[in-house]
Length: 359
Ligand code: PMP
Image (cartoon, rainbow, N blue to C red):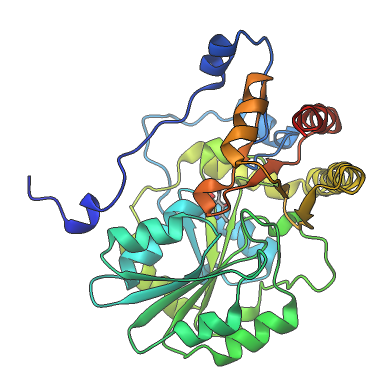
């Protein structure tokens, strides 16, 4: 086969174990999965109702322009409908951006210790990936600026950052954007922004009016609890959206996803409850860390990054055998850290007890 060199440089796909498999393997009755930053409270009742009431034919293709959802997101964010792009999750929007802007001879700048799909997609496109070491879980924005050259096409900024939970305060982010050359696209991946409560967490809905070279990515997978339906959106100025559109699959967002996302947006009360519960859960972990002297990063997401002295795989396996699934920090380049999604208070208490057993 005449595979692309970039394809050959990537590891083959490794399916994760299903919770049923884990149950069978370890003889467990119950599994608490706090590994993928999903919403432990599911989704809004309004979403369930909207799906139950859905009566259109499944034989009909989805609306490729996501007209109703587009209008709902435009209203919710206060941006123009033409300033939005929809993806099959943020994952697809990351792919669309990479397909549109990256390729051999180009480079892209990202932090180490961040979401892996930036590197993955850039590599697939044959671009050079310039990974700038994080500083204590934070993006080193000055070093990222220094890494930009005339061949840089895209810079990735994840805030709150997965897996560290750290965020970039408004002034710092503005000063960074002021210095990025205008012909470099800055992607602000805000997958967890709905969870952020810090006062100086930037609210960027209108920043594309000031910074013409940014795109803000959001998703319905996290706080809105729709990970399985795969809906994400990007906000950017019209010129950027128009350039990205050709790389999007024509029917990328499925009909149920569109219906559910509209219903999800209409229930901001649910979101508020999830945000408040998430902060309570975060406090459970903070307290545990303080009491047990476990080091951690304060988080603005719905997950917390804990640091241990032992190998991350060791603690991961220890928890797994007891029915608690977390995420090892190894694949993010943190060999002794563990990312734990904040679950319900009961799930958190269970996870904390299990971790205590390891210490
Ligand atoms: N960006 C970040 C930072 C994420 O953590 C994730 C999900 N793990 C995504 C994007 C992709 O989200 P989606 O489900 O919308 O594809």
